[in-house]
Image (cartoon, rainbow, N blue to C red; front, side, top):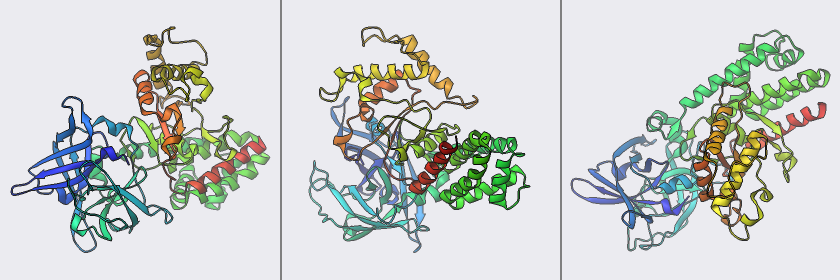
Length: 495
């Protein structure tokens, strides 16, 4: 959560004025509680911590559209969320925000939120506590462990975002006088599952792309199964999953899909057991087994892609899962390899094939951490690294002066990135920068965790994805990573 992005919502109705809290969820929409704007005639959104350079005052805009999404709880009471379309400050693009797709694991039920209520006019203080999700209910029960007092400024706690680090889990729907030891909020995972169409219409999430991606993967997997239908590898898989060697590829694929939906980790364990014996005996099947395994992993990608920023912030802990998320976003088949990157632990060594490695020495001593990053010099060095990786040459694309790049060569490099990513190619390349995002701000010393540098890179190479991972564990990520590691261990063992 970025405290700067907490917004004051001022609502004018026919007979009174009220105040609430909002938070931007992408570059066009601010989310708040349903009742805050339900009867609004006019709505203003103000970010007190962000200065508008044109007015030199706090950034303030009027809302262009008020989209109400009602929810009815088990007691028949109506509330929900409102999405306010307005000109959101550019800082939202630099702030990681992930919409929670499921409730947090039991060992991670804490939450924090920044008021409003504001405790004083120019201070923001976190509220903290615990939250209890109910799968079929839009309401999240919140326990509050902080004292809340109304002082100067406003105390419009309605609409306050409920976060765990960078993951948005709920929106508070209680008014200040009700926020004591317990209060209620609207569940973001529930909204994603039950208000999908409303969220899709305004571009907050996109599952159409996901459905298209599933169809794309199904075609790839079916082609792979058809190619191996007369092999011992196919017979081993059919016998393991359908209990017979004679089965059509479409039936086998359907069974695969059912097993993945039931338990992802268990499916890939069974897949590995089914293929290990055959790989040992028929080493010619290694490449096709690896290809099929990774394509099937693609079916585990997240359903909803939050459209928030040109820099990808991924709710995964490992680069294995980062590859699956990014492949789904760009509509490409995933492509995993066992890397030999410097300093990589073997259990974290299964990564996307086309990550462009960046190590400190490659960025030049004069731009190092001790002297502070020099944005333009670092950008130049990073673009040269991309050029070397893509063109497989150390030919310079900049002139001697770092202020005068060879613009034509840089544009050609950007178009090459786009061309290599074309899904119609035999093996599309998802070339990108990818970096872990440490929890502590003082540990974010790598230039790819610097927003200013990333913006400079993307001005030069808008087609180059920059991905940061480490914001949270994906569902079953630990179990799935174990199965991926074991499969690649077997591949390496018998190669």
